[in-house]
Image (cartoon, rainbow, N blue to C red):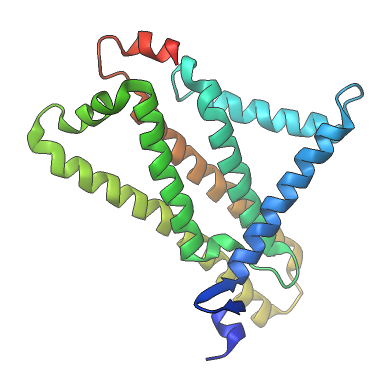
Length: 230
């Protein structure tokens, strides 16, 4: 099979490094360099970039504060903000020549969905303890335990497939339009891509935030006190 058709870049025995992996690493490297640059530049004279990033962070913090308990905002914010920004960058990178959005690859969206799944239980266990977190799966009756487990699995699958399906269909639609109309309509097409990329990143991040908030919900009489002590 053609290597380009498979999207393969490099082999190391049984290990395969694909375009998705390379692009993901480049996005993480970009965020790392940006953070280092901002740290080295200092905050004595904030630049327009500082102000723009601060506005983005404030907007994300406001969204988090509207969903999760006030005591947990600072704890949840780093993960949710990183997730939101990464998914947005991954969606938009497909606009660059010879680049493809990692989120059009099911393996990438499945990994992101698994991170959300694990983080949901991590935050829930930190807030209520292992017993308290597991207890809510048996409420209001232990009979509902299998249904809660199925719900956890299906919503994780839906999270991965929704993002993958939307980004894949977006790139396929853009390719078809370019094949039919050539480059006569590039600007509207780019605007559509940007809008859809932002919307999909927002939906993914908001669903992750809602799942985490559900795990943080108080299910024990003394959980509010425990939350303040964390």
